[in-house]
Image (cartoon, rainbow over all chains, first blue to last red; front, top):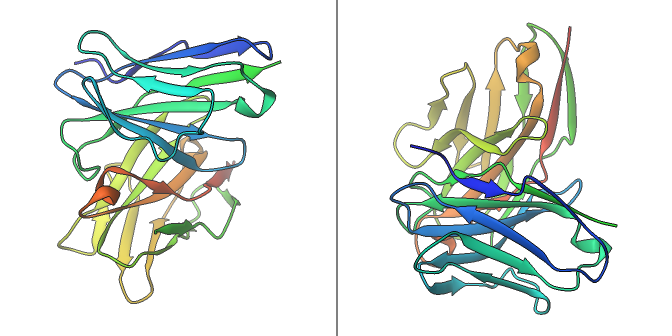
Length: 115
Length: 116
């Protein structure tokens, strides 16, 4: 049973380009969460998705960021027109149920560097 | 709204010495508490969690944490650390119901450095 798979592990983008981060949840998990870790900070909640639905995107920046979790395939976090401040580690977690007290597993993260 | 405070950003400790990493939280509702560990360039791994029942919880690698409701604390302890414990440790909290139950609020982390 593979864990939460995120790719790429490292991503370098120039300012103004688009970044696409992918997350495949654990088998049997239909709940996906994205978190962002800025340098010297703890992780901050961004968005919670179930298959084909965004449940809570209260932590997402209002512009340039979007997330989806299609019926088939991985969840995608998309950042358009990246800026230096988007440089961070982006972590995905998945769980079998809605509550984080159930076993929520984190992926190894995608480290985005904007140059 | 919840918040988590990890009082120490860095903790150096000699090998085989005891260590305590402090965590305090604030919340207006009942919470679940977690400690995660992040090794260099790795993802987060759940170390231990408190959901209910005994206030003392243990991990398989010798760490333990005690939930203290009156002091709103969930400090992490280990009686004798190893070099391999060098990592960053994050305390986190989630509510036990409602929208907060699917969000983890993290502290800023404590970097534990074990000195040989």
